Image (tube, rainbow, N blue to C red; front, side):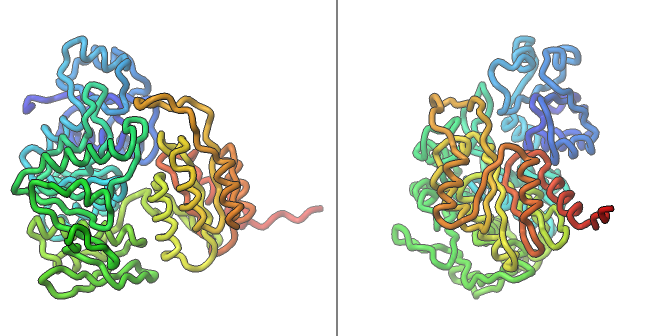
Length: 488
């Protein structure tokens, strides 16, 4: 594909699609794209890279200019008029995953980060650590890495760090995306049921991860989260070396203890510290700017992966404290009148519970108000109704956006049982957790504007734009701070 001059992206607004578009634009290629609608941070990023996006899908978007390659995102359905026009016209086309590997990764050592949770942060950590220790990696991550203010980078080093999603590749290729990245080093952070629109059950998810493990080369390495039962199960017959990491209470599974352990975990205003125990090595103190036990696991996974790539633990430890994190992962959007608004991508109940635990450690003073939008295909179903209640009850006050009465796409059968915000609220109230649900963002903003007080932390959890609720909350708090005119 060295003769490429013009690449067109169908559904360019996805994080991966937009990031690859930006990487190719930086190489000097002409990039065009189309999508239904965009929202920050990707809309802002694409505009900053000088990539114009046509709103809506239309055959003319590909037939008029006839690009050298059409990249079709996994959000595109089989009846998309633009994709159909490209295929019927005989234009070269590829899935995002294949285009990424062929155009950017094939000549590099692939470090692929997978798992139900923690992929974006761990991928960003690996990229940052390689960069900060002078290795100049390439990377593509499913978020804006704040150390680079970008979701991608093309470096001169030998490594490409990529976030490996288990979602399917395209309407014409139903294999998981991570199978296309051919990792030589693989991180598996967790394996849980998610993506109910394409996976029937947990066994189907485990089967996908199992296939990835079986494809590993004999000289490769898997870094496995040993605290997680399903991770242990999918790596059981790995054809390559497996390095195990976990927290202090990691169990010995199949007679094997973790090779790398985080012990004596403590949080303070600066972040989290822990003592790293590695077999045959002296204990080391690690300080991370991140909060939450799940982020200790992410840090540990990244450090182990970097050691596999030739970066000694001491090197990683020296630069770890300067890591800036990822946008939309415990991101502070602002603070007004002592009320702090946090933006977090959590949407699976395990991630929701982990984010609440992390924010408790980060802001021990005041109340924690958790605002949750059940927006994903899985969260809009009844699958995790009980688990969401268990995760959210750790907050002081819970506010839930009611699920819209809209059809839910599913390749696994008709969706008949839907998530109920009312049932969630009732369950939480019965367990002495204050909770309420609202049908609109403005109603939520009005309610929180009335009850929030100094030292409160408002944790907003959504994987979407959520009506720009963060800025609306900060504006509401600022309005409350203004002196009211005296009545006449």
